[in-house]
Length: 391
Length: 142
Ligand SMILES: [Zn+2]
Image (tube, rainbow over all chains, first blue to last red; front, side, top):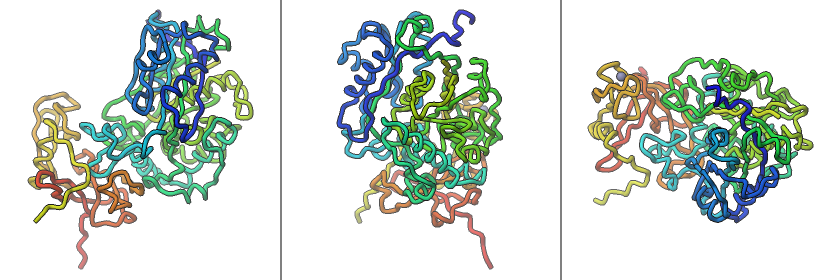
């Protein structure tokens, strides 16, 4: 065990984004190229020094790892790829940390590129969604036979369950997208930058009730990349390393539903009172949630922010509705979250744009949206995986 | 008389779920029950997902349960559902435990509530496929 303790053994040394936009009319490979080039430049590394690649969201909406290597002339010793979901961000970075520490690669680029530009109906779900019709149900509770389709519908089912169980509703949930839009208004790279209030939120149309349009993430084009290497090599790179001190993998089973923690009682989950305890990621990093200066989470739908806060023990089940009020998750608040604007307002790069922002926060590069004295930032999701970073 | 073409997505019948769909066609709701530990589960599996016993029985269920959660679709995703927008999808918790996704019928969307008692109603949609929908259990008034 001792020779493979990964605490502080890997670091992110470079981060890069492409342009983000709604109709860039640029291909996924085109966008991925910008993110990789920018991340390598940020790290002060050359193409020759990059020998590993992990892609979290492939074709046809994204770019596949093998094609990227061919088209961009990469010389890889190892590559890997998940299937096309946003949920694999932490997993990819965890695998990269293992690869570089096991000696199978020196520097690994982890990325996602997405381009919805070329699609006639740029949306998730519906008749084009083959995974939603897979054996035994889709990845977000899809059941097309009854019209149940799209990732957002699964989140709406969780939101309704949550509202009913804890006695709250859209008026409280609005605080989440409002907060992240405020953050995006300070981020020149964000796609949606106009702030709105609770009345604007309530007036926005329902997509899948109880979720409004403003509870939904963007569907867009863009790419983000991070470069992972060993902490030893990281010290020779251009900028100060951002170390990975805690990791927790992606859980699955009958008590898991992608948008809910165990016990909430959605899909085939048992219904019970969930208790977060001190999750393994904190034990590995040697910290508690109180030590976290900023929290980032996969906010494809605003309800996921409540679920994540409760899952990781920032508040108890049923308390996120009040916890997220009065600016607590905004810049200057007790626990700033998704300071880039998140998937809700900066752009949906499968959570990779969040990793870029975390690194920039820990380097102090975020200008007017900088979290003061940020030392420890966590990536922690509704679906149960996490990374803890520190400078 | 020409049968109007059914426009909504149809289930994919597999080696695992065929007894479920065959039962619905016979106006019965059946799920697997473990012969060893008694668990009744959904979706259909090759073994008991708890104790991994291979022996199970497709038992007939009451067809009754309660609404656990529900959503209302306001956006069009499937042509076949467009005429029904906004339409509901509910998650019904059967009295025997498993939860099924379904559509609630005989109730306006704004009357749906968590905990509402419902019972199965069978809807033949093609000559081969019958769907399990649910409706409120009638409270008889004098
Ligand atoms: Zn069993």
